[in-house]
Length: 244
Image (tube, rainbow, N blue to C red):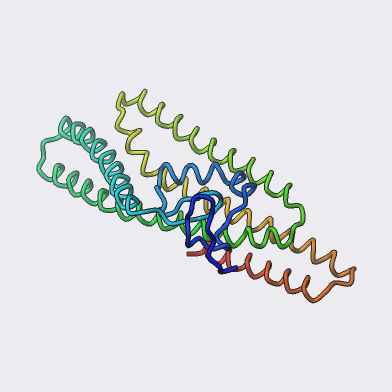
């Protein structure tokens, strides 16, 4: 399984164990799409194979960080106007400046942590897909439910963010709040991706238990037992990665 593969586009160096089937990509499309738009993760999926991106990735990371900082700076510019309307006290101005600088540094750290976590989620998914096709029980049902709930969570999260932003803008008559929400939306998307990945692992573990119950009433070969043990270890390793 650790042999190099050369696909139709001539890409060499992709490991066969880094292959994600089309049905799994389809089930996780909402999560992967949000990650690629908001996080710009250090990988791409070409013809089902997970490959590292080229040097342009670092430019995308820089653009992502600049986008988040620009959004937060714009938010604080509007916040300064509110402070100055209330008080010209130097202490108030100093505290507002310190708060802005602290948040800008925190945004950079949070962004990079989220990028790393998005890659970690993909590694978890690679381990789970190996378990899924080993168990091969209720596969279509699990993937269908997973895709539906992915859409529900993503649409629900975005809807909440939009409603909150609209309500805030109507009250304050400011657009700065919407820009400041970009950073928080990235964190929320990452948490949703992590939760859905763990849920997928839990579904596989439940399916594994049901298949083992079937095996207890049948005569099985050593190869079948070994494959089920490997599937179990893939699930455990994947859930262990979720703790990082």
